[in-house]
Picture 1 (cartoon, rainbow, N blue to C red):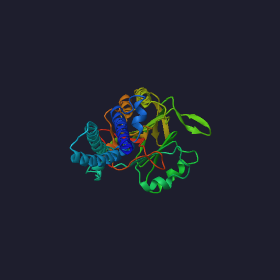
Picture 2 (cartoon, rainbow, N blue to C red):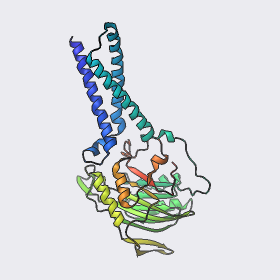
Picture 3 (spheres, rainbow, N blue to C red):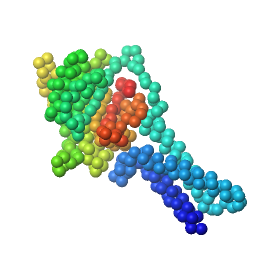
Picture 4 (tube, rainbow, N blue to C red):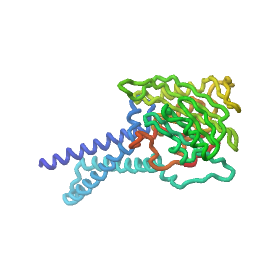
Length: 350
């Protein structure tokens, strides 16, 4: 009797865990980071919430099979068996949906086939890296083997020389540099104009030396000359404070870019000169890349692009990516917080 009662309690606890985790998974996907309460839920990796439910469904299914054998032998179907069957059915449905989401949305396994540039297309390989929190060193040998057409470095350490990177690039082809905190760009394509600005956000970075550093966020744009015309690239670095609600932060950052009217650096033969921006706002981008400190698929990413005047841009991973493309933490990446978005005239090839 005691054994049966214990198994009954254990079964209902298992059902409760299934329901709670499934509801958290659904809430995270449905509400994303639109609300303060839903943001931490949406940041939990979907597989972390779904995997225990999958295991619980297997265990519950095994127990249900044994129970049905006993019921056929006795000819009785208790009411709790009917409820348990309903919960199990819902669990199986959730397991199927969440597994499909993992394989198609999170891993993009339906995009495993690589696509090559078509005739007439200009192929550009863009590499972005944020050095914050990483040790200093010579970056040239690290990135030159990747053969980037455009390399965007964010938050470069003072001990990592831009001159060394430029010299490493120059050994294998032409190099055009646009250097200036917090972004450094090294390009095989001429960089004609560029500008940068602080986003003025209220954020704090991770503690350093027992103090919390101010992290206001930064953005820059670069106008590159390609064989197919001008290519405008935005570089973004949003605050990393995990306590900050991302939707209002992204909205404010986007509006800052839409109303920006600062000085523009214009390349000349012997250096560059400054000129006033012709109109308010960053120029319409073809590519937006950077460390957003926001997980892939979050609603706040769309809010940022819309407010900044870049609505309709597509996530490069959703267009062509596949596999476990995560970027943080560096040692065991779980979250994809560095993103690349492409505009109407750009096709992503990963």
